[in-house]
Length: 201
Image 1 (cartoon, rainbow, N blue to C red):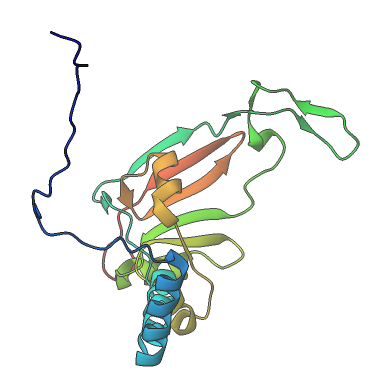
Image 2 (cartoon, helix red, strand yellow):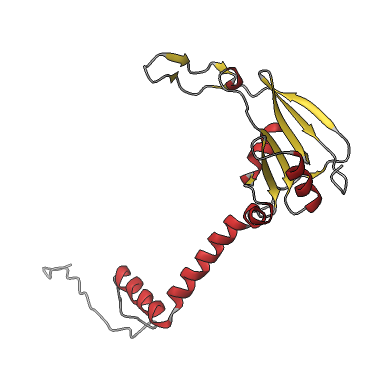
């Protein structure tokens, strides 16, 4: 190479458009949501959605979901149940005195007796309803539905009914069939699955 300096030539060329291009648009999310809500409001959809949610809430209260897996008592079955629990935190009285320490096994029946029996029934079965109401006064027992609407039956029977939401009680007591009666027996609970015939036998 003589005295001519080495040169690098760079050239930029237009190769044309390789594909479709789009403008970048960033919308404020809150603006989009607000616009959609205004549209729903103007079209009456918000009121409709609110009414639907209200109706569903009322229905879930008036007609709770039936407890699954329960049958009808065909033969008597009775057993004792220990209601003892393991305390998760220290329990103290109003003066700060320790009643039970964390991790201690405590039987609530040692402190409070079950003053009312718990009677579990299928509230959609008129035979079970009539039997429970005839046999157990409101002072003597709480009648607890595992199916059906307790609210719809309060007026015809002129008494309060309850519902075992999610089957928490029957599951804890090991109840598999209704009617079932839970009674206090010393520091234990007596659980009896009791067959009922038409006519309240």
